[in-house]
Length: 141
Image 1 (spheres, rainbow, N blue to C red):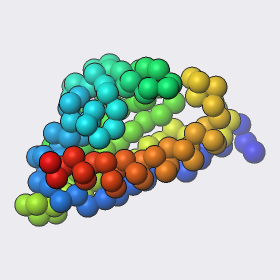
Image 2 (image 1 turned 30 degrees about the vertical axis):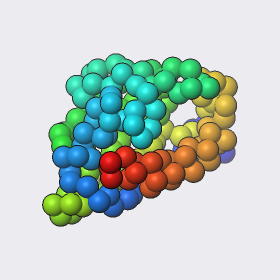
Image 3 (image 1 turned 60 degrees about the horizontal axis):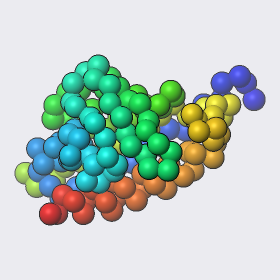
């Protein structure tokens, strides 16, 4: 193993049965994101520092790094990770969401002393459930 062994990024793609603008509100506002992911203090402003309230792991610091309304939001999460959400309008009532969670390294541990190799597995299945079940469910409301 070399000193920095990158682990594969987590990629999730889902077609949502909702207009682009509705999906954008769900992924780029504090209230929207809280409905399908976790409570937070997000503001869609590049450079804005916010917190994800991650329940058992406490608060995680984040920072908005890129923003192109209504199709792209990127933010740093904790000390190592980056989350990118991209939206593509497929039709009036369908939007494709791509989520990329990067920054995984086999030699690093999280702020909570968990190895990336372990946490990545939990996150992979967590994102699967979140973007393919929880997010579509709140968009139907």
